[in-house]
Image (cartoon, rainbow, N blue to C red; front, side, top):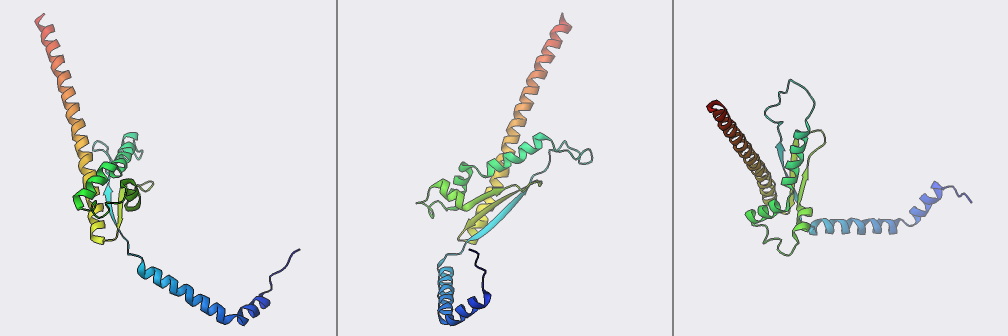
Length: 182
């Protein structure tokens, strides 16, 4: 039942059919060259965002990463890969007309890739298109808008915190004045 491989017999077999092997190899190489020439080029541009730890953290204090910081990394990733930002980026760069027949989700899967390498505080936004300039513009615009949206959200939350703190202070001052008056 066990038939050992005979290397000498196989070599004789290939040698006897060397013309067929050569023709098959040339045809395969020709098909590969034609496929390579006919396939449009794809260019990938990557923009990286360095996400710093919150300002209150002293780098000398501890090496432990807080949950708030880890959540901020995930937030950046979600913002960069959002459908609305991708749609806005396509519109801003005039790419929606170029890919008008393609569904947004399908196009996003083909064109945009957002990754955060494990253990790093860098977000990488890659755009793959047939035009290298447009690919670079898409990656850069997406990165810039991700930062702008994140800053806007941060500023809004800070305004809310200040407003809440101000109203608490004002209420406390009113109570103090009332107690002092009484």
